Image (cartoon, rainbow over all chains, first blue to last red; front, side):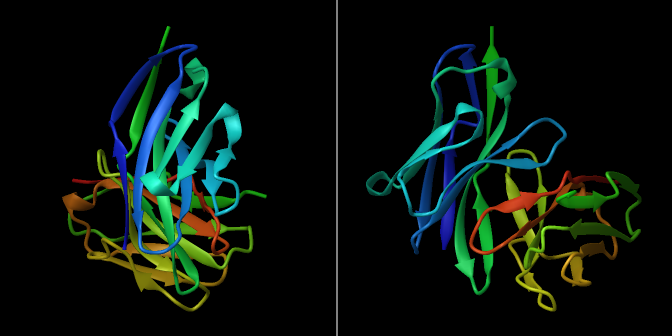
Length: 115
Length: 111
């Protein structure tokens, strides 16, 4: 069984400030972890993924995340927020089921960026 | 290379009507998935197909059926639509065990 908890359904930051979106996971097997971004009225786009290689993962648009097994966390960060980062962000954990990778998603965090 | 495509983009149904949502991918992925997205609930898996010829239930399969027509196409059918099925539906595909690629979604309203 696997689950994801995203702390904070809404996060507001000023442009140029640090972005920190929190994700904690639960998995009975070594997890694959993902962050997706969804812009209004669009599908989900992969930001970055952890697949048991380096624990610090760099993604697109300046985002990165660190896998911390001891804390069962995979928090998403960006040093300096930009207005274009305003979107909804989803953390997901994957567990293999036969030959399919079923993703379990968190409930999402809406990021607002203010001037 | 279009990735994952979905049709239609929008649909309004009356309670009791039926419809099929279409999904196709051109990335030669083995696995395909259908999700629904509701406010505050993230994405929930309806059905998935690990490979051509197989389908399995996800978290919320009631009221839906699926068909894996071939390796490229995976359709979702609502036999008798209910207002509780008002949602945004996403199709995705993947090469196990990696990330899933999502389509643009179908926004369905059932009145």
